[in-house]
Length: 495
Image (tube, rainbow, N blue to C red):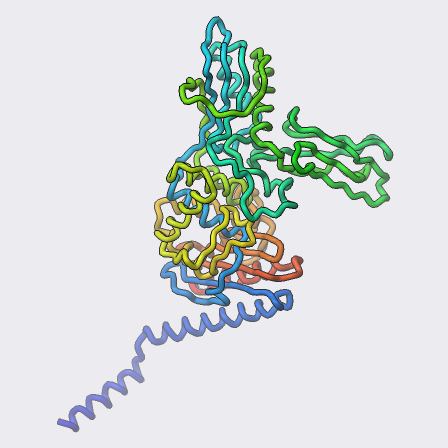
């Protein structure tokens, strides 16, 4: 009996030596490939620009969620605008891809013989995409309803959200920059980038050196004033021009010099009072439509018994996600947080909205006790998340019904079309990552991030969070090097 067992064991061992299991060979091959990936990534992370910094990296298989590589993957780090990945996903889940913001014109008066005796209320409900032409459309629609004269006031209603217009960690020096614009339920945008609550300031040189520079606002608004202290200088003279807004007012300050051979300098400046800005555009549109108006322009809440005259709907959320995510629009993120709070908890605040985002992340399997959320855009230096949590989130949402518009909203590496490449349009061109990497960028002082997909579905999911570095120059090149290696790894795995 013992001899028989011994013979069987010998035969079995000989068989395994001659015909090794296929799975063992495959696992060894995969281990070897993963080892090569780790070696290449570790070499990139040895860059001296990262000395004293923290490079949080997490890479997963997009098909299984298996963690392939990590470096400080379980360390909480500041994500910058990679926070928008959470906000976009939560908005799609909570509001739905077809959700639209609305703006209303209402009255507490009566229309008789083309004369409206009563007030007109412009009620904002968060739409960040209102342009001057939209106010024109509202005015023309009002005239088509027979309103040729208004005997009352034009009143702006900004009560849809709470009165906190700036998030709690906003740096004071950012308040006049477009990315730090106030969040308001009633607001306007200057162009189709939809930077709500901002105005475009364009400065042109005068006809000859010594002349005052020429300053133009777009759209023009009578609530904004310009203090023009800029002069034109000769082409061979060093010129420095600054455009800012005076704190606590809508006064634009243009100071310094502009060279005579410069075509123009242009800046997006956040206004001090977005509802007042929107009301000024509405007032202009009423005049241009030929509607006579002699009342005051005020801000107040709409009476509950006011009559709805016109409702203007925005583009759908899935469409809004393109400028929001491709161009990393902070204002859109914060408005979406407040809108989620308003819709789910009847409170248009950051606190209520972030509770909705937290609930959403819990449903996605993330341990939210390990995450600190402070706003929707990631402009806060206090927000903290682990790279492994971001990559886990990106893996988990692939089966959601709203994933397609989410994925379409991500910037595409090296795609020169601004509406496709977004903030990645100039990066990773002519590399293995071009058109392959779809990812969200992020930047703050001492923070840079890139998280997304390499060939979604059968490729990789990754998160790169670089924190606490000193030298800003070339830090994004490190992210690009990592993404290119991941793209090469993904492609090689399919050959």
